[in-house]
Image 1 (cartoon, rainbow, N blue to C red):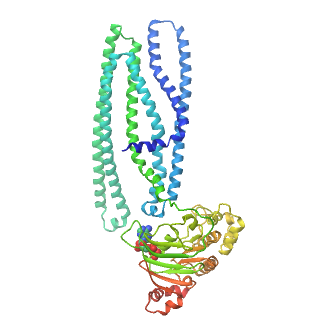
Image 2 (tube, rainbow, N blue to C red):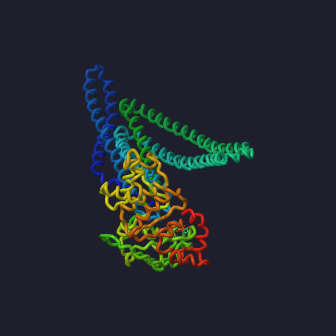
Image 3 (cartoon, rainbow, N blue to C red):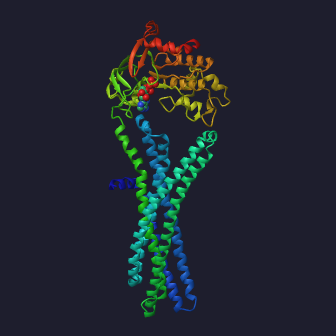
Length: 583
Ligand code: ADP
């Protein structure tokens, strides 16, 4: 573990230093008062021995009440400042991580599971809060109490302190050794339990098989043996802990006994008072618990560093993936050119998704990409959107290489209508407005887009109209309705380039017709790249490009291609005859 790793976590609290300083100040006040208490008790006991009258008692109690009030206030403030700073650190890092994740390249999402990433946003960040602020605060306080306590011990009785100074390191070393053992053992307990869970999961998910083959006994015995194993390991751990607890308690009371013994002889000699011996024992207990808290913190801290490593890796990775190209105002004209592009997905470098791929699509031209699944159609769309960069060759927009253009500038001119229409949770209005390049959208513009997309009618039929909520907590829309909303979204964007990823599953013919009409409106006057499956869509294209294993094998108009009865297009259309007839 480098110092850098520690520093990275500590830097997170830098913006909150003024708050933490206030927290630190009140903390010092509480520690000082905590250290005064045993002395006050010593004073109380010793004075009680000398002064039998109770007159002095009221004054003493008054002072103690004042001290107690300060202590209470300081404790509350200390808690508030450290805890709230912790929450602020966590909110800050959540925002930062979320923004960094949003800006990651799409390739990043190929490598990571969404569940894992959202878990990092919640659980991993939480760990930081616990250790970074509260943990740090508790251990700082414990450290102060520990140091102050040792000083008070030495001041009270140097002789008795020697015994403790031997005992304390022994108990810390012992505690550390046990802690390590516990970690190893709890890991193996967890593994055994996870294994038992796996066996149960397997049995339940194959429950029909278990019943059909009458294998209940086998299932039962396999679960029992895994549970027995987990139990055995847990029992061994419990035996170890029982032994340790016994030994530790013996050690503690043994040391107490020795201290009291020697203390008593000191009292008899007149070198120590009863009050001083009492306060000594209390200080000793304080030092022991706070030393334990400091060492606990250290192991927590190391665990936090391990648990949050990935967060920092992600945060730091964004700088590399950001494209440094210049920004440009305005929009594209819509001419696209692929020039000898070779591309393979970073996750699968051995397989070429596009091979020496060249294609020019003129501004306003409609090109249908067809080919069997895995031919590379979606890859072309992904490259257009700048999700990935070709390893060889170039992609040009309006004759300019994408290397020189800022991704945002390109994307401002593109809209995509996806195969499986994605809608966010929210109102229909918000879902359409999502397509706009600006945040302020006029309601009239949204309505106009919805009308062109043939969505206005059905939206108005909902009781809440455009404010109708969609998604999990709202209405469930039909496939055709969802598609028309996404078409309205694309229309609102008014893009120069349109990517149409057509659904493979057919809609009912009435819906289909509406969607087709909406698409006609959308495509008018725009460069369109259709990933097409249905004949009705393919027939609308000016040019059809047939792909096979990342290469163009045939291109031309429908009439031209159909004449080549030995060609792949003829063959593909033959397979689609059903769709063709229904269209
Ligand atoms: P199509 O859209 O024509 O069905 P794709 O463009 O999706 O084909 O896929 C082209 C090739 O790239 C296929 O071999 C596919 O397995 C592979 N591929 C697609 N997406 C990824 C990805 N995210 N990571 C790795 N390989 C991929």
